[in-house]
Length: 213
Image (cartoon, rainbow, N blue to C red; front, side, top):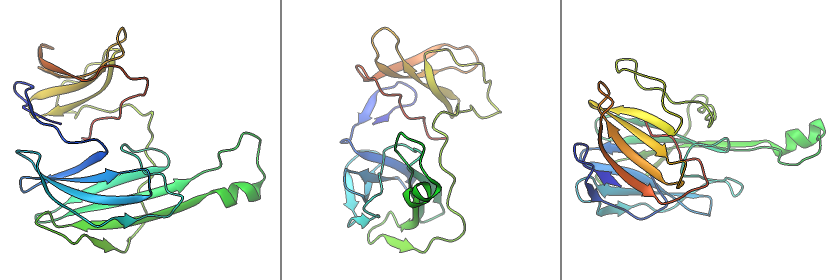
């Protein structure tokens, strides 16, 4: 979804299973995440949400479990420069049994793979690069997010799942306790006044992913 930051008006909405990674040169670079262990780069027009192009699938190991948000099993890190977006991915598996396993079982159940994609938003193909250095650490999915220090950072209310500063607006992701609805709202960080709010999902039982920085 793309929203007007001042009014909250919906500008455009795209289909599900897309994970936005970067905004560059008026284009949104995203990954299509599906049930199969593949990544497809999708590039959208930032003003209209229209598809510009999509890459051929990039195969990951058959055991990889890709996800729309960072988890213990799958993590993304994105970097941008003047003309390209570089996406680092890491996939891991862990022992999932109930009984205490032997050291050998633990060792055999641990797998890790990582790779890097270089995306030129102007057009395909996507370049698969050799991974240099250590991969990113797995995300701590329970760690609280932080508002940048330059902004007032009061303790978030109990219903606020996450908050980020976007320009001079504090954007909060809120779970309504009564209805279970997920709401995105914009707040004046100085006065705490609500500028607008948009309901993203009528009801959910899953903890919503944190907002990107």
